[in-house]
Every structure is written in C-alpha cells, then in structure tokens.
Length: 122
Image 1 (cartoon, helix red, strand yellow):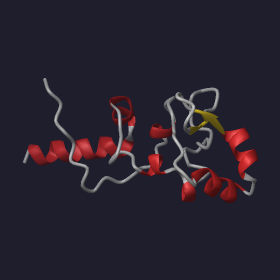
Image 2 (cartoon, one colour; image 1 turned 90 degrees about the horizontal axis):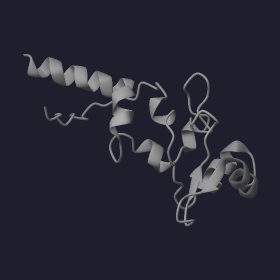
Image 3 (cartoon, rainbow, N blue to C red; image 1 turned 30 degrees about the horizontal axis):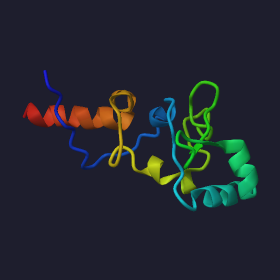
C-alpha cells in the first residue's frame, strides 16, 4: 500500500527531540559556527574543536554527536541547548528535509497523521 503524503499545513513542533536523537549529519552553513560560538560564549576555534567535525568530502562542518548518536546539543529533557541559534538544517525540519525514521517517531508528525486520518474519515 502506498503511503500518502502528509499535509504539513499547521505542523507544530512538540519538542519530542526525536529529530535530534537519530545519528546523522547536521551541516553548518556559512556564519552558523560563529553565531553558535557567540551564543555559547566561546570563540569560534573552541566551538569548532569541541562541537564539530569535518563532514564527508571535507568541505563542510557538521555538529558532533553524543555517544548514543543524539545531537551534541540535545539536552536530557529533549530541549535544544542552542535553540535560538540552531542551524538552518534543524529549523527546516520537516519542511525542507525529513526521513521515514524521523517522521515515524516525531510527535508533531504523529499529530499531523492523526489529523489527516480524521479528516479522511469525515
């Protein structure tokens, strides 16, 4: 059975942390390292040394992960330590990128699926 595309109108992040808890690359765009470093109160060199790595291809920086695969900035209560300055890749979810693994565990997406199901049953 083919899966239906979910209507993202009205998507609201439920701060479940699921999108930050799966292993993968969080690429930094130009200027984001400096912005995050300033927010954390460290210089950009310390920030890049402690919190980033070179991504495949060695042309971009990616945030590092905790030993369990979670984003280095995901707190125990599922909040983002750098929320006000988080990378554009993070703010784009689920509009500019997503994956089935992420969508299946995301509370906001679960609510969207429930809403879509209820609308189709009317």
